[in-house]
Image 1 (cartoon, rainbow, N blue to C red):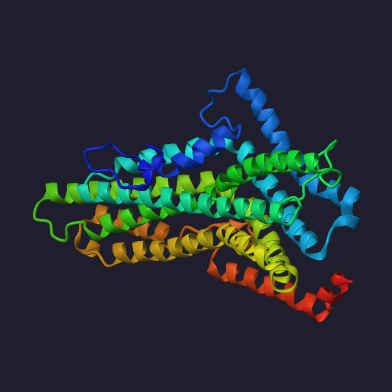
Image 2 (cartoon, helix red, strand yellow; image 1 turned 90 degrees about the horizontal axis):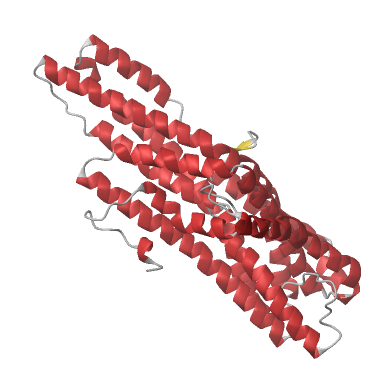
Length: 398
């Protein structure tokens, strides 16, 4: 069943945290990434084709179209093409990053397997199942938004007698005849549609991993809160210390997981922040000044797709910082001062480590949080305001 993972499994069905990225990993494997190191020569040939198209030809195809056919672009079509051009360059960067750090994907899932070992109670098992279902639902939201945008762009292009994405293909010119129009429409929608399909993973992998990470941070906080408050014998003290050490081990795995996924996130989200503001600014100009009513539906879904690339990740990164502070408070307010000397020393060391919240940064320049995302949105409005002040809409119409 294709959509079975968007529903929580019962406790009788074994479920692991790595299943939260099952759809994403399957998409990446289809795209040519050797996620599980099990590729034969046929899949390696497909990998070369897929990588060449996604990382080289697709970004260049927009530039080639500008070189050969710039005089045929209207203002609305040019702006729509520019927003796609910028996004494809960012897509190529993400695709390359995933290909370069492909081993980190499996390493991250191995960390999930270790974290699952600490989830022994039925309540924790239920939380894991809920997390897996909600994370896969999040991926499906990406897929639906991207699909609606692609189909609406195709329909709008066909209705108005032009290409939906305006990419360049040698030996095919849709302007020359009806036959070439149909051929290029099929080729373009198939090839760009494939890139959009891959983009559901390249744009969602960061938030999928971070969302699952947050669930384990909250589970660890709950374990610290639920540690027994009273001890009556030496064996109870030993049990309490063993429980605390287990929490420390879980926290170490969380940190190892973060170190594994940071290279996957840092550079790509930095580029995404920079490009996202420009894309939203260009899209806003097109939406308010040039786009035909039939094209605005697709543009709105395109803006939703761009927002999905940054906002959910910023939200969960922001939430993890708050959850880490809550975790530190949970341990500090526990009756650790009433324990024996060994327990107190261990607690103090753990508290010192917990005072450093889990944070993600973009190239160590700025933090990934909601404040940064708001600044990106402000930059988009700045682009629109500058264009409006320069009367760019009137100049392009001329």
